[in-house]
Image (cartoon, rainbow, N blue to C red):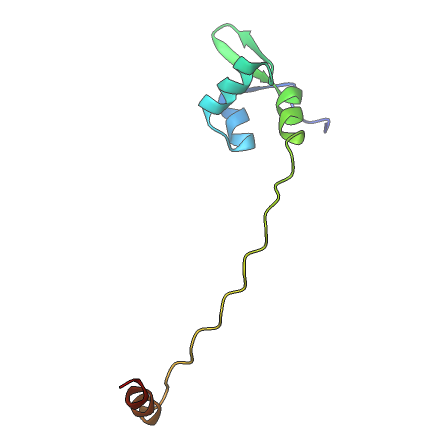
Length: 89
């Protein structure tokens, strides 16, 4: 963990840092996967536990998309337009 990383962050900062919703973060806290402490009314997230949770997630296995077929050429002259129209009819 870098030296300038805070030990605790607010719920909003934790959500912004990991691009997750408050509801998702509170589910992680409730399940015990992420630790939180209270400072008066504020809930603070223990940064290390949040980072460890996201670091332990499995890698995504995503297939490469199928290649996209090249589009048909576009007629650029009036002769090509007439040829294409007569071939279609």
